Structure formats: C-alpha cells, structure tokens
Length: 149
Image (tube, rainbow, N blue to C red; front, side, top):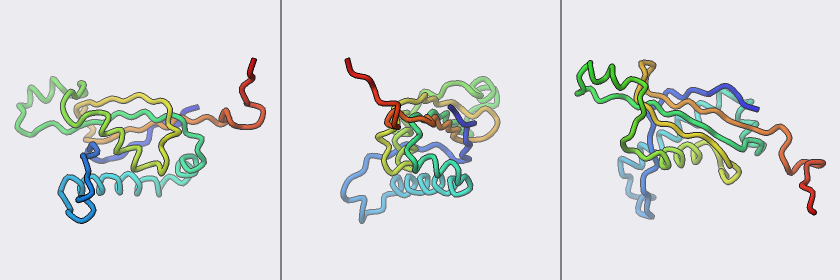
C-alpha cells in the first residue's frame, strides 16, 4: 500500500565523504549536509501520521525523485530542452539515497525496495518527492510466518 508522495522543497544533496575530523572541523560540505537532514526532519513534524509509520517499522520501501536546479549560465533554449529530463551529473544517486535515509530513519536496514530518479527542474522548482511504501501486515506478524517444507 502506498501513500501519495511527500514533497520536500529543498535542493537535493548527496551525503559527503566524512572522516573523524568532521566532528570538530566544520567543513562547509558537512554543514550543508546536516542542514539538509534537518530540513527533511522538520518537514516530518508537520506529518505526525507519517512519523508514526516510520517509527513503527512498517515502511519497507522508499522511492524518490530529485529535481535539480539548472545552472543560470545555461541559455533559455537549453533550459527549456532539458526541463524534466534525466539528471546524469553529480551528486551520485546512491549518495542522495544515503542522505535521505539517514535523515528520515534511525535504522534504515528495513528499507528493502525503492525506485530512485534524478531529474532537472521541470518548472516547479528544486525538490525531492518521496513515496513511502508500507505493508500494513508485515511478514513478522502472527499468522504471516513462512511455512518450511
């Protein structure tokens, strides 16, 4: 069962490579990453029903589409031709996925499926649209145990 997508009005950002030094040396990339996570978490405050689902562990999949802003140096013609097209530049999709999962889940090991997509802004502004997929009857519920032969 799926919920409608939740729209986060934020510029998509990938998780940076981090070291022990980042605990005391506040690099700009790490500060941007923490601000990004805080923005996603703050949006969940407005959605208590979704927070409850996340905390209950019934979410098994998370699909997202990230819309990136186009560089202002591009011509209007180029911007129009690439509006909504696939984004094939950095940041890598796996780093964005790590950042989203780290922001929304304390333990993301239960997320087993999802679709990932990066696109150029389609005219609605930079954002991330996330669809949470959950199972109201998880396999670990009584009566849903696998049968061994």
